[in-house]
Amino acid sequence: MGELIAAAIDAGASKILVGCGDSGTSDGGMGALQALGARILDAKGREVKAGGNYLGRVDRLGLSGLHPALAAGQVQITMALNQHNVLTGPRGVARVFGPQKGATEEQVESMSAGFERWASILRRDALESARSTDFALAPGTGASGGLGAGLAAVGAVLLPRFEAILDSGLAGIDLDSMLRGADLVITAEGAIDFQTPKGKVPAEVARRASLHGVPVVALAGTLGRGCCDVHDIGIDAIASIMPIPMTLQEAVDDGERLLIEAAERFMRTIILGASMAAARLSPRVAW
Image 1 (cartoon, rainbow, N blue to C red):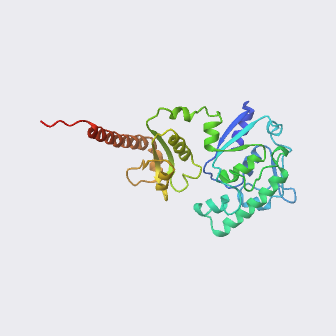
Image 2: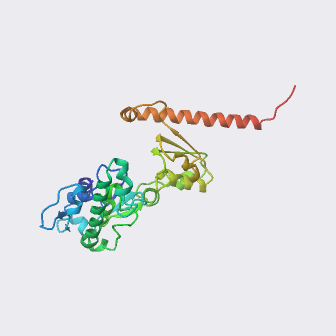
Image 3: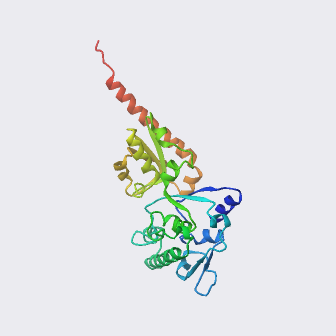
């Protein structure tokens, strides 16, 4: 991510929108910062190895070599993220997502301690303009394994996904205008489960659709634990796009066809319901 941001800046970008979702790393944004010219040092002034395992050894964040455009505040980085994800504490990224990804209790505690140390270092060594940020508990600091906190230290603005994408104008989407006069909204997510109501885009789409009185259906790769809870937030119906058991690789490889066929099945059901309703409203003549 840091390499991509640097390449965008070098290509002349002055506004960068970073989408934060699941991450294969939990390093607090260390790697991204290093790619942007920062130095992450231990107590002896040595470069700390990449990876969340080494957060506990960090003693200083050096920003003297930071990309000049970032150091001068010439680039606006906006991060579209889940504001429920924070870096530390009982709901910190390590304790919430570590067990989901197979981390042991010992590993979770080690990561949590590392993130707490990292938050204190960011508070001290971040760009002066960013030092008022609560790197430990501010909404979104735990996004993408702590990338939110790391990039906030160099001036990135952390916004809820729907606000960054739908309201900022950066993505060129005016959802509210699209909803006016619509009869039905179809949204989608990789997995609909207990996390969907917690800041995921389909939940905000449903909230805004309900303000316009428009029903919402959602298609998903999988339906997980708590999926039915989304009916309480305005999603009227849900369905998985997978008609039969299959491997993840099969689902990914054939995703386009599966989505098209699931959408057709859903629409046929809606058309059937509409035709039944129309038949009931039609006058019946007895001969």
